[in-house]
Image (cartoon, rainbow, N blue to C red; front, side, top):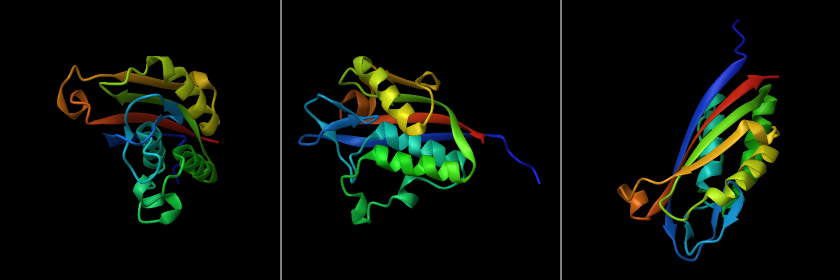
Length: 162
């Protein structure tokens, strides 16, 4: 029997920007005229992290564990869902080793909120903030991001056996 000591997972999520919703990224409420449309709080960053962890565990994706057909997840805080996935990893004897994530957004500018996102995520992930890296980029006006129709996030997570 081969025991894997490290695993890598990749996550991606995208949501449409709409009026009348708060913009929440990495558990941080960002002041902006639009927010993200979705069944939960639509936190694309946290959703990408969830998918990355589930991928590293070979446990499917966020929709399999928290389907939008379940009323229990309507408007739910995505950090709560992330905590459940961290507990699943712990049950499988894995702990997050590090996280690297990128948010793709033409607007709003996110640089002043990235450290707070890292702090919030590291708390839920039960890791030192120095192993959590969140970046933001634009697409120089190209595509649906550039037209400010939506935001996306990418995440790579490594897990280590405990």
